[in-house]
Length: 592
Image 1 (cartoon, rainbow, N blue to C red):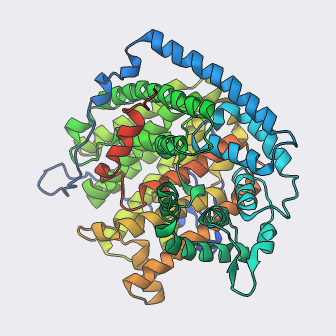
Image 2 (image 1 turned 120 degrees about the vertical axis):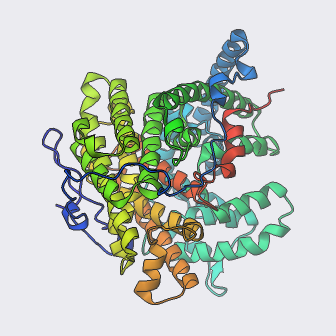
């Protein structure tokens, strides 16, 4: 069956993404159908000669060894840190009491929704999981008819965000049948409706209409809102809707904005600041570990063609799990994404077609003895991949080590997709349809590997059943893979046309529909929008079958992909995210 993976021990490399998301029109292909058999491994790849290599032109690392030696002013006194921890615990108890009080029927629905929303935006919700879960379960049974638009929209947004399949019919009473829009009393009403509508699934016409209406209305309203913070929030929502944003990347600015609100709760505010600073100290310690590991691989001195982005890798992964309890998971997934980046550069800018064939064979074998015919640098890379795999395995308890074959098989599938793209590039081949393109390129984005790897360090919540599920490349993961590939192609098309590069989905779209570039761009964006609806639908469906903690990693991966490709390829062009990294990992929040 397409997409299925055998059990560990008798496992075969996973099949490619079947693209059965409706945005890809149900394409399903076996691995053997997409990747031809490599040439004989007895062929000797030509040795490095330097002059014949592609020059990547990637920016050097901005951060280097910064986090090996950096000491935060918050870490200078152990007594001060102990006070911060103690004070945060006191505040946590007091805020928990507020949540319990807000759960009562005497508290208005709007007040309950607002409190949860504030805690989530400030990245405090992980401290109150039980209380929030109880409040949401009670809210699901509330009749919202007769409530104002903002309350209904935020109720809908919160419940869908947490996997409750509430009906979009609740917005029917706000339709303006004569004007063709919705009856809203303020820009805040419009913004709340826009956020809610972005959790639409296919066929929800009322939400499609709401997105169109609110986007148009907010664009015209934003300059005249009067409140600078609201205008800024509208601008951000129109760039990336709230359900698709990475909360931890915005937490510091959100703390500042919340502090300026007239109804800001002082206890919540103080807890948010302390929590942010305490978590930042933990991130700094993890960055020391990651930087030391990266330096130990000695890649920078040997592989000048590859992107040196280990801090950016860690930043990416903090967006997948920001919570302090997931330290091991963050470190493991950072190692995986750093190796993915190295493999991507090896196939994309370094290896010749013949070398890439042989390199693929070596990884398929997972045997260092097969690497004899590789050029020295590629042999070196292969060794580092095996070393990293072993270092991750050593992080796991004996009863968790069954997880590693899943990772290995996804790495094998990934390099097969990379190798296929090398052939396309060398042949100047443009796939005839976007569907054909995605059969390979949805896999080369590595999101199937990262989804699986995101479970590896998560402890008991990720059982063998969860790994079998994620390795079947379910529709949720397929949608993630397609969103990444199409978003990446939209943002990197012009840059990649400046050098030899594999054809993008944009070129396939132009060929398939016989349309010019700008029309193809519009069609690709429409595919992204429709794939988000598929993602939302699977999000609601799978919350009944898989632990929410695991599904949230896949949703967060999707959010980080959107962030990284918002305006540019922020990972490659690392100056784009330098200030955000500095804000998150270096600069603490000031506490008076």
